[in-house]
Every structure is written in structure tokens, then in C-alpha cells.
Image 1 (tube, rainbow, N blue to C red):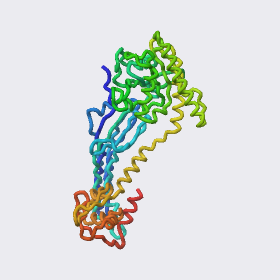
Image 2 (cartoon, rainbow, N blue to C red):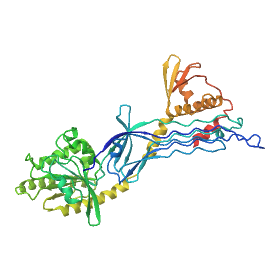
Image 3 (cartoon, helix red, strand yellow):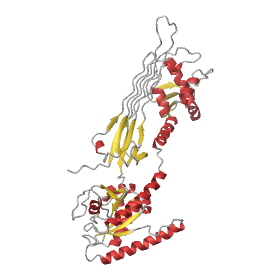
Image 4 (cartoon, rainbow, N blue to C red):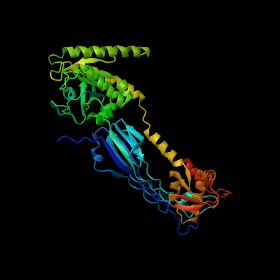
Length: 471
């Protein structure tokens, strides 16, 4: 039985909650004034996606949709820190695009595009562990009786979309012989039959030519209007985006409908350009298939002349740009039945792919973790103030909300520390600029308190906040 091909899934991920810090004081015989010794809570585990070349599809995520990393454990006395939660590693095929989904389950932001084996991205950062009371000692407050709670994390949905990572893709109308070609060129064994739309899922094969090798994909047949959703090929056009080289297969016989090969060639070119503009600029090799069938001589001559003219025009444009390429669109007449012309085609594809790989290696700079982490930090720092009632204001912001969540509200010292943190984060400045007055109600999440700007004088907590910001 053939393996199920799954190339797009939605999953919910949740990193681990941070453990709570501990409020504790050293108490030992003959040791007066032992001082605070509460340990920190452990960091929650991250959810990490890793591109793995041994994984072929997203089938592992078709039936299981919820994934949660381990939480950190709480800190203890005697400066014993809690253990960090174990990271959750999710392995996906090379060529997986990761996108954030909004509340309507629609993609709203790209997180990463994992195109190399071993490439990874942290999609959900584990919650911070709360700090123990050893961190809150100041010159004037020698025995702080409070610590931080661990940071809880929220689940969210992401989209995983797999796009085949083939060096070359066989594209063309249905039943032009793409499956037969990939079977002749590689060890792939796709279903082959004499009716349209035999291929319902992409096939991938490995091809060798001397010391060179490359992967080739057989993409299900396209028809006119595929870019607008017509036919079976629309769902698989995404796989053409990945390929460095397009092998444009044309049936010289015209198939069941006796189509014109030149017209077929132009139709597929238009569909690729409509789907993604850069596909029109992708390197291409035209493959005229079924050249062994009697009566195809005229079609072969017309198609070859059409491609030669197009190649010469492209060569002139490239020359104006300083690129000397005398044959930018190579043309091969082949037969998947007799194997005529296949060796020359394979050698040409292998050479072209090797050159494209060198070019891609020079351009590749993986920075997904840095970019995604930078966006996360930007969201943390963002503060929004909105008037909800005449004398009530709502404050929103990931960083502000985290401060509130990690505060022990029954502890006056902890609340005083929170007030200073909010002031340093810019909350009071935003409230004042929005028109908030002393005595107004301030709401952050499910917590409400009275707005009273305060002159801190010696600002005893600043040294603690400064250390926190430097970490």
C-alpha cells in the first residue's frame, strides 16, 4: 500500500510553564541572621521544530494536533534551583514552511522556512522561572520576604506546509509522460497508466550521473487555470516553488485531445508565472517527450524552433546584463520508452543543478531564530493603553502581563516591586499621555488597581531591575 502523502497541517503548540521561585531564609544552628536563600524556579521547555531529511511527510501531525513541552519545577530553600523543563523536539521534512495562525486559523506571519537538514527554529519559548528571594536583596532591604511566580505560557496554533525539496521538477500537462520519465531516470516507481491524472501525489526520485547526483520531482499534471484552482495540479504547484530547475515536459503527440505542443508549452509557462512571478525567471530545460512515436516529426520541429527563438531572445537580454549564456533554455527530444536522449538529458540536468547548488550555498544565511526572537521581544515591550470606561483604563502588553502574572499579590513587598517595574517599563508614562488621572482604575488582565503615580525617592529596586534588563 502506498504511503499517505500529507503536505499541510495545523497544530497547536505550548511551551512549558516556568517554575516558581522560593521565599526562604537560611536557618541553621549557631548561624544568626542567615539571610535569604530561596532558589529560582526552572525554565519551561521550548517547542523546537527541526528539519530532518529522514522524514518524508507530515503524517505524524495529521491525527495528533496538540503538543506541549515540559514545565520547569519550583525552586527550594538552600539556594536550590528548580530543574528546567525538557524541550519538545518536533521533526519535520526538509522544505517545511512554518507560519503563525491568527484567531480565525488563517496564516498571519511566517516563522521559518526550513530548507536544510538539521535547521531548527524555536517556535514557542519556555516560560521564565520565577526568581527566588535571594535576588531581591538591596542595601536597604536585607531580608526580602517575596519571590516571583513562574511565567505561564499560552498555547497557539501554527501551520506546517511541506514543499518538496527537489533539485529539479518535471512539470507539464496531464499524461505527458512525467511519471514514465522519473521511473526511467531514477529508482522511483510511480503509478503509470494511459489516462489523465494518473499521478495524484508528487513523486520524488534520486538520479545519478557520474560523480554527480540530484533529486527530481514528478509534479501532478497541470491544466489551464491551475493557478486559479482548476484541476488537480493546483494543490501541488507549491512544490514547484522549491525546485532550482524546471524540466518542462511536452507531449509531442498532443495526448488524447490532440493538443498542440507549442500551445501546451505556453499554457504551462503562463500558469507557473501566474502562481508565482519568480517561477517565470527560474532556469528551465524543455523536454520533448514521446519523440519515438511516428508522425511527431513536424511537432518536434515546430516546438524546437519556438524554444530556440525564445532562448536566443533570453540570451540577448542576459548579455545586456553582462551574463554570457549562449543557450539559456536547453532543448532535448527524448523517449521514456526507448530511453533515447535520456543520458544526455540527465548529464545536462546534473551539471546545471551542481552549479545552482554552489550559488545557493553562497547565498544561504539561516537567521530564523534571531528574527523570530527579535519579533517576540518587540511584542513583549509593546504597551497599549485603552479607555474602557470614564475612569477605567485597560493596559495590554505581553511583557506587562508577564510582570503581573509573576507577582504574589498577597505580598506588599512584591506589589511594591511590581509598581516600580511597571513604572520603569513605561506604563505610567503611557497612562499619563493617554489622559489617565490619579484615582482612575487601571486594569491589567483580571487585576484592577487604583492609579497613583508615586515618587520613589531612593528607588531601592532599580539595581534589581537593571540586572534583570541586562540578562
